[in-house]
Each structure stands twice: as structure tokens, then as C-alpha cells.
Length: 478
Image (tube, rainbow, N blue to C red; front, side, top):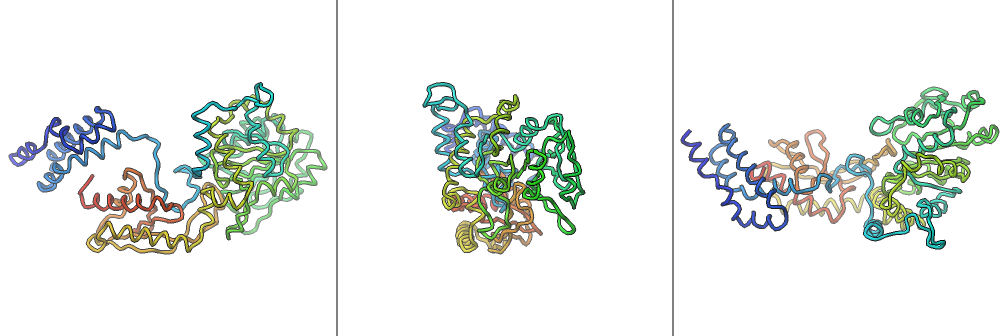
């Protein structure tokens, strides 16, 4: 107890800490209350740890000497936004949990211009009267895809719901059983269809559906034929499905609209980068699909949105549906999507400037150079040998993510970190708790940092984050 009393006496008071230069520098950039609360919380935690005998005496003294830095970390965490920037070291390009596709700086410049000023969101500048917000994107989407008309809603699930509600409410829509997919968050095509008021008519089996399955199901209650691209999984082996091209004569014969939900939606042939072919929106339109729906924030590389393109007669019906107002997008989405789509007028420009396409098309030589650069930065900051750490540049595979190209494994380069006697999970956790969190992957007791999803300007952040992580493991900082 006497030893504990002596340790308690070493803990500085709140007023003393407020005079510390590190703490004073904090006061200039955040509310005083946050700083004072952080000081009190760190002191209370230290007192509790002493009572519970959680640390040796020398560790407690080290913590006391390091209190200003501990308070600084706590205060910054309290003062930070809940929605924060992170570094993606996972190699999953379209990572749903950490924001999917990145928006290019050029696109964000346009968003800022629109956001901080008034705009002609729903104002026709030529006629000087109320306009339509969809008009800003219609010409671009039509030019790029070859459709007759287009509109945009807040995500692709909303796009599918609006299409079905407008064209098939109270009527049957024929879909292959093998295409009744589930998307993120347990949302399923049958559920979306039910919510729209359309009646699902599933045909065929999970692995095999034939054209005659569709034709045999057509009756006076049929409102549409529908295809759903299985972008987030594949059924392999003894399988067959009906393509949009094969359905075209059937929809002409019975005068039914053909709807296709492409899910991810892509406007560039990805096979030119050595990836698996993914059907493009342009291909669907050429094959006679009347309405195509797809996402704006996956392979397209823009903001979250659901894009509907196709026959004007059907899109005109959708524009009159009351759900259109509930699903409409705001000026931020419209400005970001317009700026993204403008890049697709020149496909090479799109690949160069849209981060998602840039990452997917990146060659192994560029990745190796980036890995070497990060490796050198790490060994400049950390004495790897004394840490009992093995640091390597290794071959691995990245993933597309976002429910796109599920079988695709893209060759990449990673920094691999392993320890002789330290907990690799503790390092992974420390990186997540860095001031700019770094998300990595752990496999077979090693930590991997994939260079495909880390930009050149982020390499210093990753190296500094690793220094923080190693210091955390040594107990220098909590």
C-alpha cells in the first residue's frame, strides 16, 4: 500500500498538466472541455490500474512520464469525427465496409463548386423556369450507353424497386431461379420484388434454366421478363442460363419489356486489363434489353447511385411514380456522378483518372516499385531485427470486391510482417487505432499490407502508422 501511495503522489494534477506544452498545443485546436475531460480520464485510468496492480512500478512511472502523449491521443480521438478517413491495405478495391469506390480529386472539385454555391439543380437556364434534375445526366448516360433515356436514384436496389413498381405492379415478372440473388445486408431480389408489388414467377432450377422455361411461364398476367446478373457469385459445373440475346425474340413475340439488373454495372471492357469479362451496360442495350439498372459506386467508380437506362416510354412511366421522389438523389450525388461520367467520354482518360479503374488496371511492376518504397520507409523508422520481426515483400492476390467478379484474383505485391514472439493481432489492432486508421489483413499469423489499394501519397502514413504500432506493442503508448 505504501508503494501504491508513493505512485499516486507521482501523478500530476489537472492544473499541472494544463501547463504542459503538449497539452497547451492541443488547446489551440479543440474545445477546452475535451482536453480537460481527456486529462481526467487518463488520470482516473492510471489510478485504477495502480489499485488493480496491472503494471509494474517502472511501467507506471513510464506511463506517468508519458501522460501528455496519452492525453493527446485520447483528446484527438474524442475530437475526431465518427466517420473518418482510413487507409485501405486489404487489397479489396471496392471494399463495401470502408466506402467502396474512391472519388477522384477532379470529381470532388466539381462537387465542391456545386455544394458551396447555388446551382441550376431544378432550374432550366434556357427557358428561365423550373427544370428537371435528371436532365443534367440524361445526355451523358445516353451518349455513353446507347440507351434512349436515363434517370438516377439513390442506389441500385431503389432502381430495381422503381422499375418493377412502375412496370409490373400487381403483375408477374419471370426470373430464373438461378438469378434470385442476395446482395449486401441480406437484401434479396425476391424481397425487393415483393416490396415493389410485382409478383415473382421463378422458372427453371438453381443450376439450369432454359428458354422454354420462360416461354411456358408467359400468360395474361405476365408484365415483364427479367434477368439479374450474378455479379457477386458464380455457379460452376452442370449449368445453363438464358442470355438477354436469347430472350430478345421472346420479348418481341409477346410484346413484353425485358429488364436486366447488372448490379455492379461497368462501362469499360475489363478484359483489356487481363480481368474476367464483365458484361457492360452498352452490351445489354445492344442486345435489345429495354431497361438496364446498375450501381454508380462500384465498378463505375462514382458516388452511390442507382442508374436506370433504356427505352424512353418506360422511363417516362417511372418518372411519374411517387417513389421517384422518395428515391431521388441530391446535388452532391448528381455533381459527382456527372463529373465521373464525363471522364468516360474518353475511355483511356477514365482508366487514368477514376481510382477504381486505375487500381484494377495497375501493373505488377508499378506495384513492386511501390512495395519497395514502403519497405525502405519502414526500415528507416523501425529496427526490424531488434523487434524480432520479419519484413518481406511477397506475391499475393487482390480482389475486386463490392459484389463484383467474385472469382477474380489479381496478382499483387504485399508487405508481409511476422513476429517471433509478439501478437500479430495486437499490431493489426494498433494500426486500426492509429490517428488515420490503417486496415490490413491477417493470414496464418502474418500481417499483409496490399499495395494495390494504397496510393503513393499514403506510403508515409502507413510507415508512421507502423512505427506507432510497434511502439504500442512495446508499451510506449496505449
